[in-house]
Image 1: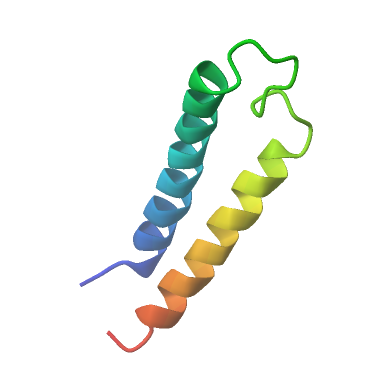
Image 2 (image 1 turned 90 degrees about the vertical axis):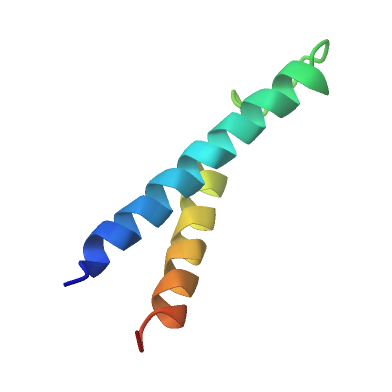
Length: 66
């Protein structure tokens, strides 16, 4: 028996983790000598949250019939 809530948690968690790693890579490579850092930006957590919510919604819509 498949547990849909576990799948939703996995999608949300790994989306957030992947975006945080991506932001850190961008900060350390591209924005290394700049005053602006994406990780320190006040809206970066909102971007991570809304992106993960959108991907969870897409995941639910695609897997509803399975």
